[in-house]
Image 1: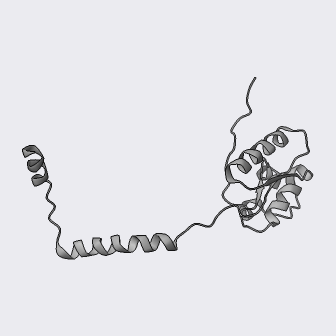
Image 2 (image 1 turned 60 degrees about the vertical axis):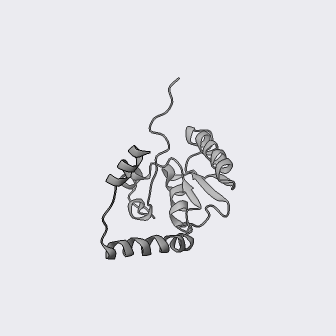
Image 3 (image 1 turned 45 degrees about the vertical axis):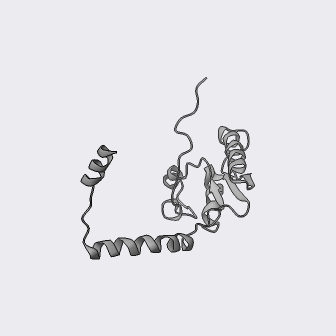
Length: 142
């Protein structure tokens, strides 16, 4: 007991009154701020996953697996849609022209290369897409 008193006696913090009042006001306002800043539930409706390649490829195999795992985890339907054509430009264009609400996802496009290959592009991938994420960096080897 004596050791505890000695330890607590050394841990005395000397706060000026103004700083203490600022900390107390911030602590009192914290529960009210956390009620105001609730995040929206995502997803609240089905999400569309666009695969810009023909069925039967590696991307077509991976996309349903990703959709199934996301459906189980987020408890919402994920629909995989193949939109092949023009070296993945057709599928990419469908995603770029969709509303930017996060309910249309693109899997496995090589559109950054296609910008240099085709003279007439109806979309600018660099200015129209945002927040890319990488699912896999290499194909699994057997």
